[in-house]
Image (cartoon, rainbow, N blue to C red; front, top):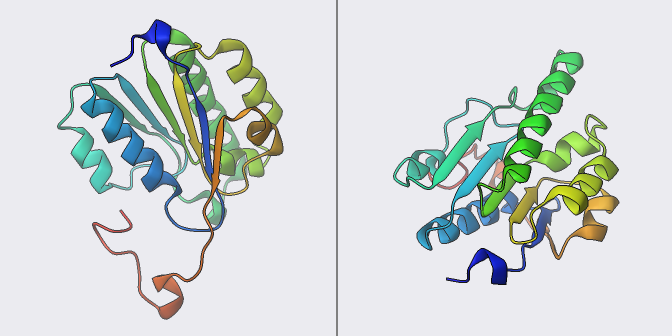
Length: 178
């Protein structure tokens, strides 16, 4: 494995209307963990909703997991609380990135918070440019990635929905959706 000094830390953005943004990021989490890298996952939206990936991460000593959101905020009844929670999670994210402790940091569904103007896209971009260690990889997911993040990212993937089982009345399936 490359030493930190020889690594080019990437900013990866997974966005778009299609399924697979978080799944792709979490695939990278397990790939990095398998190589012995120290990984931090910070989830902005999912809250206490238990996922298979989170359960699998407990088998790795080198993955730190934070599921901190208030749940699916597009159904919010308390936007002020969602803003407060998102800002607190962003402060934790900044601390984890700047700490230099982690090789890979995932900011899962941060793009939603930027899209709702709870956290500015320019604020995130400016922080990453100024504070992200040169060797650290940061992966950001969620629909509607702000243009400021797209501009500074090394890799941007837009997931396009062709069709989804939900449109046929099939609810989320354990092991596939969570």
